[in-house]
Amino acid sequence: MPLQQHKAQLEQKLQQILPTAGLREYTLPVTASALVQTPLRLYLLDDCDMHRPLNEAETAAAWEDVPYWLFCWASGLALAQWLFEQPQIVRGKTVLDMGAGSGVVAIAAALAGASSVVACDIDPLSCAATTLNADLNHIELEVVEQVGMNTVFDLVFAADVLYDSENHTMLDCFKQWGETVYVADSRVKTMPRAPYGLHDYQETDEREAVTLPDLGELEMHKRVKFFKSS
Image 1 (cartoon, rainbow, N blue to C red):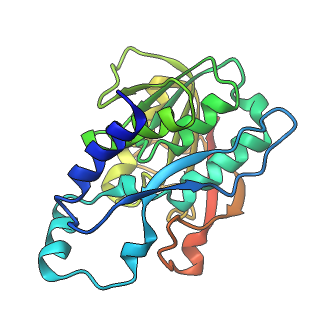
Image 2: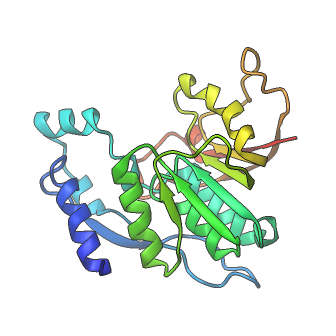
């Protein structure tokens, strides 16, 4: 499907939630490295539509079907920046991006030289947005709503998926899919312990990033911590 046609179809779905909203192309603040010099671009919510309060119907529709894929969340951006700075982490590896959202981490991994990338999100619109953004960056991804439990990857990435404590049980699932798991999250300052059996996730890095379009989040939510399974 042509890129603009795909974008128009996604905007049509978006406007069922927010009637006046649209998408625009953003070039992310990701520093090119000696090995990765391709700019990373995403279609995200046009921030021109963010300068007015939502009416009651729009607010209800947005909360009923939260369009997470409209944003490049700070944790995903921080992880993408990290991959561009250290492409050797993924070069030649098979990668799974869980909770792909806009697809930023999956796309960064592919641009950094991963041999294959699977982007997974339970939201069909996130899958559509990831496909659109992969096309925008001229890369190929496999985009799925579910991953088979017997599938194994070299690396598993998960950015900003622990915003709800009920999601913490996913951390053990991640380890069934990958030899090494990296988790980036701005809302988790220490990795949860029992009953999840997560004592082998260790903090490895911390960096600052801002969600795009900028939601004016608290400073504490601009500090992203990285955790790695050991």
